[in-house]
Image (cartoon, rainbow, N blue to C red; front, side):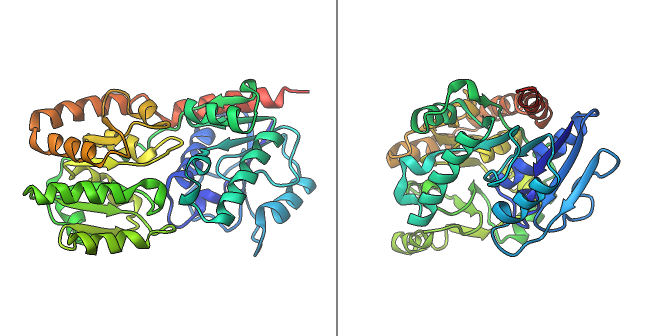
Length: 370
């Protein structure tokens, strides 16, 4: 069969969770499936070598200035329909095949509406329910998201397939200290440090992390906090909080860090912290465990599914508990070693090869429907 994939998110110049999901899952599908044909749709030409091309794979750039999904992609689908359409990181076009599959990553906007602007909340609500209603089947990254989808969009459980994402193989422990020193130096990061990786936005609960870090500093901890990620939305209060707490010398905002630098940056950290209020999966947690770095993360939504017993789970609303967890990890070298081993074992459960095989099974079941 001919499988069409909206690969527009995969060519984003600065990829984060959804973009990486689109890229690595699409790549893995092409590698794992020798039988079907693929047509990848882009809103801009992909960089050379990003995807393999050949007899079975057609790369289809179709640039368009505005409303690319609902106008240009819809026209393309209507003119040259694939047998099945897969949208891994966005919303189904208004014109789409009856046999369509979409991934819904999370419904966090329902739980923390103030973490999003009004327009964003409306669009997220509309696109989520539209995908759930219009697709022949939907995939989710966790059982937490499946439960949310069934509860809030009244989607039939039989329509929702849990397929866990994988981890980029480049995320592995970096033992070369010279490489870690070089990357840290290039990004202006002093050692030792703890690290957060992700977009700066309210849902990530970085204000609580700054408060917990301030507690550590007030108790004499000689540690720095690295916040690595691009500015998202409603991030301005974070910089004001750093000034208010007098943490200018201890907190380092790196901005977006290229994917190639992240394994070394994460491997060099004493701990990785994600105090998020809600996650559909939490890919940075998986990447940190794959690097052998001890992980502290929230005990809500999907994060316990990802972390298992390899991380210290904390209440994201309890700043004192987060500070205690950080202190415990920083002061106990034996605990850090134990968490590193457990994290590496937990990360091995999540591969893009397995994700691709399970996704292909869903695509084939969608194609068989009348």
